[in-house]
Image 1: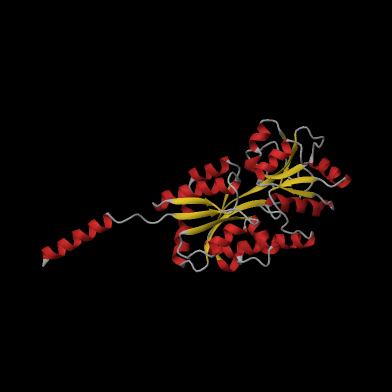
Image 2: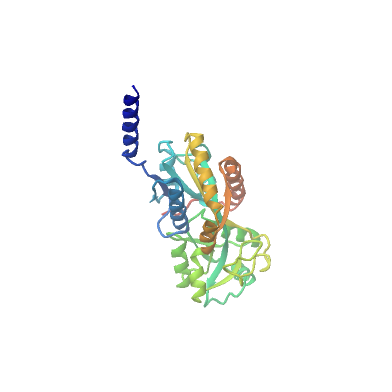
Length: 317
C-alpha cells in the first residue's frame, strides 16, 4: 500500500514538473507605439513578469481615441490574463464619449494607479516667447496653435486649463502621439506644446526647445532650472498625467488583490523608483481598494472643464 502511494506521489510530481507553463498575461496599451504609456507599460510588464514568474506581453491596440483597446479589454474574459493600461485620457473620455460601447467605471475594475507627472509648457528655441507671461500675451493677441496628442489627452486638457485661466481660445492641433507633436513644435509648425516630461528632455538638452514652466508646485529634479507655474505667474496652472492598470469587470477579487499587491511591492523598490524617476515620472501608487474613488475624482475634475469649453472628441488616431 505504501509503495502504491509513493508511486502515485512520484507520478504526480512528474506531471507537475512537466506541466505546460502558465499562459502569458497580456497588457494592452490603447495608444500607438513610441509614447509615454507604451514605455512605462513595457517597464512594469517586465518587472511584474519577473515578480510573478510568468511572461507578460505588451500589445498595442490603438484607435478611436484610445477607446478601441479599452473596449477590447472590457469585453475580454475576466480571468486576469488581459489587462489595460489607462491614463488621464480615459477619465476625460468618460465625459467626452458618454455613448461609448463600454463604461469605464462599470465594465473595468481597477488594479492600481502607478505613476504620475506634471507637464511642461514648451516653445521652439527660436520663438520670441521667453516666459509663460509672454505666452499669455501672445495668446490674447491671437489664438495659439498648440500641438497635442488628441482631444482629451493630458496635453490638450492642460491647454484647456490654460485657456480657462487666461480667457483665451487656443487651437488644438492633434498629432499621432506626443512625440510627433514635439517634432512639429521644433519644426515651427505649432506655437507651443503642454508636454509630458519624457518627450522633451532630449530636445531641451539639445537646445531645440525652451521650457517656460512646469505644471506643479515644486520644481522637477530633471528640470531644476524650469520654474513652477506659480513662479511663472500662474499658480492655478496645475495638471498632471498618470498611468494605471485595470482588468475586465468580474475578474476574481483575489486575482485583483494579488496583482495589486505585486505591483505595490514592485513600486516600493528603490530600483523601480529610480527607473521611473529617470524618465521624469513619480511613483504614485494607489491600490485596488482606493482605485474607484481616485478615478471618480479625476473624472469629475476634468468634467467641468470639458463641458465649460465644449470640448468634443474631435480627431482620433
